[in-house]
Image 1 (tube, rainbow, N blue to C red):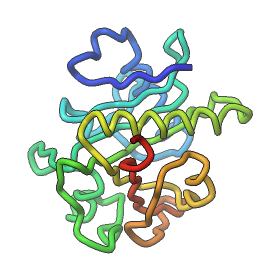
Image 2: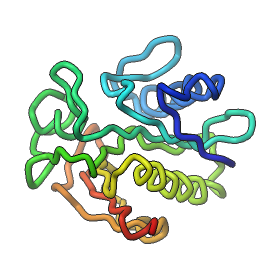
Image 3: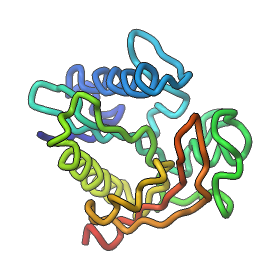
Image 4: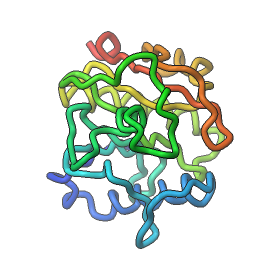
Length: 196
């Protein structure tokens, strides 16, 4: 099991890994969760998959994707869009409530957004915790290399059950909201202490 952080600068060095990650996202978010998201060529994508973003992908030696995540700077801009949590708060996304944060969405070089975090359903139950912990750990390493000390993320509201296991300080940034039948909450992940 290994982790690769993809960017538009290095994507060509990793064969099908980027496409495989988008295929795994489609399998989970569109096929399994039945979310109404854009797709093409068997891959899920959205307006935040831009050269400003990075993708942290846990995979095996053959390129089979086990887990993944997208990192987007909170300073990103593309047309009317910035990053998902902020755009939801600004009322630009009709699938996420605009009252998802207690305060105004941050814009800072040291805060990135973590989105589309997933562990593939093909990962056996006996390995899921290990894969999830590696994803969060390597997400922290990638964030720090990008200059971020914190990431905002919209997670299943069960995050307090597993936050301690992955060794990351996590704080609720908004209320628990039911989105498409699942309780979710915006959380701040603090990597500043974990990775020193």
